[in-house]
Image 1 (tube, helix red, strand yellow):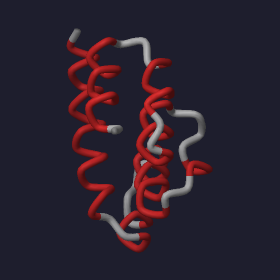
Image 2 (cartoon, rainbow, N blue to C red; image 1 turned 90 degrees about the vertical axis):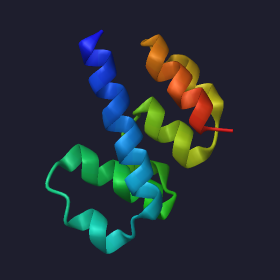
Image 3 (cartoon, one colour; image 1 turned 135 degrees about the vertical axis):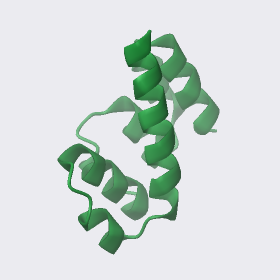
Image 4 (tube, rainbow, N blue to C red; image 1 turned 30 degrees about the horizontal axis):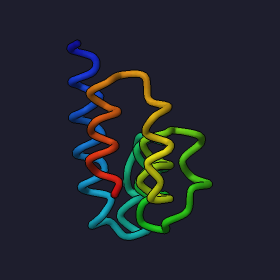
Length: 83
């Protein structure tokens, strides 16, 4: 449960910051995973997602990717974000 909450908070913060991000700010992120999600969101290119369902759902705007997420709280978060 703690791991799911941590993942939920991570994606919430990451998606919120990625919406405001531009390419230059993404490149300053040290974590490769976070950097790729930021680039995917700012450029609207799923090639940076590397099959992460939350990332793909947000970039492509398709809830179908949310249903592949195993953790229920993350799945519901994804469904709420992607309309």
